[in-house]
Length: 223
Image 1 (cartoon, rainbow, N blue to C red):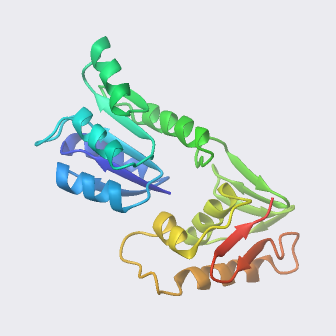
Image 2 (image 1 turned 135 degrees about the vertical axis):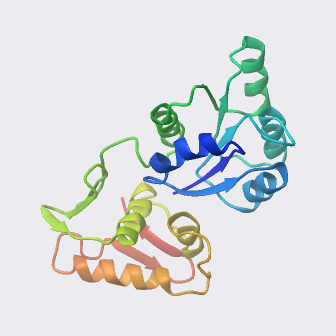
């Protein structure tokens, strides 16, 4: 899952990153041009905007992002608790406002609400299940029936994304966008290799055959 954090405040970034990166691949933008470019070009699961920017306030930036038809949920962090400001924030397209001082756990909780509302929650529950497969998010364990299957970090992240999106065909490009960091070439066989490794681990278990492939379209965990 990928998150865009827009902030120029180094102290705030240092508070947020250690916890957020446990759950998300994070891109950081610190000015208006890079914020607009990244939000328009990449498909994010959540955008977090710190209202302090050098060249544009958070509300203006949010309005501009929404004008580009970006529908990604937006969390705004602000030190302005004025009622009129809150109204302007929602008019600008903000989904949730969180007031300073920053509490990263409140931010994570609000992200969970937003992603659950959009049917794409990563942290809102401890266990994700589909058929005979289950992922324990807290303990980072994967099971086929009652059988524990050891998965490496990226294998786990890949299965997590497929199971969150169970019942929907997920393209290779989408998996690269949400599961891997920047720099992975779309023509790379990284996804295929990881899918093959997971399938081998599921052989002779209740999860065998759970990952379906539709050539040219992608992968799916059937519901």
